[in-house]
Length: 114
View: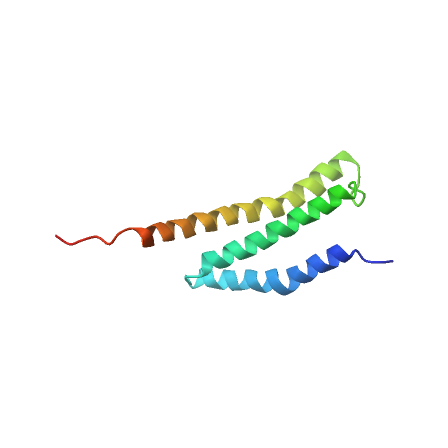
């Protein structure tokens, strides 16, 4: 049996990049490191990109690797895999909001003492 090249490539990136970066992000949040939201943004964007590619390639294949029964398709395939789109999407929005807030604070003119 031949393995799917796309799946092998994506799982390799997940194992060697997103896994260690996720752990590094966790440590950065524990230590309140200044790069924590940049790391959150990178990991979330990478995960979201992989999810979009996963769903897009499956759609292009006509959902041929998915069980066609409605409960399985909508409950398991869409519902559970959809969590891997929802969570990184929310974390991506959170990182952008916090980075924009930090930039606004830096862009604010310094307060003049009277």
